Image 1 (cartoon, rainbow, N blue to C red):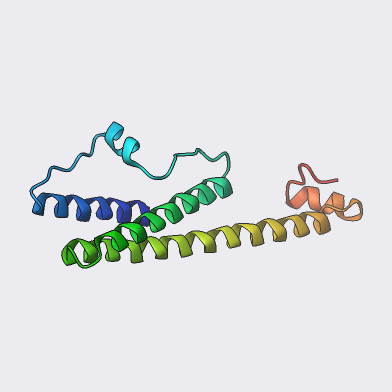
Image 2 (image 1 turned 45 degrees about the horizontal axis):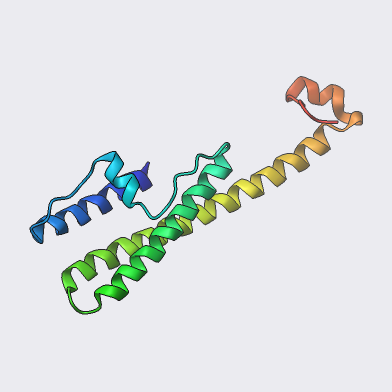
Length: 136
């Protein structure tokens, strides 16, 4: 939820800068989708959703780097806005990498626990305490 709120604040920062430059922000879903640098891919599990989010975040990071490079010193205010957003996006990516590592570690721990607790010798006791669905 915190990342979603942060992404909304990125949009607000950019919209504010567009207005300062006498432009008009376009928040229509079709317009946003058409301008997006990342393709939306729906994940089929928590891990795949986080991975897709990480991919999109890394694409955004690259886009911000390119925009900052193109701006150079021509518009220092917009450059600072983009650098702020870039820093937050980099933090988001780090957080997502950490989440992926935690999920992998948990999967390994759960598999090891299930293998140990749900072995044939332990099955009667295990069935009373935990579900061994899918265990040998």
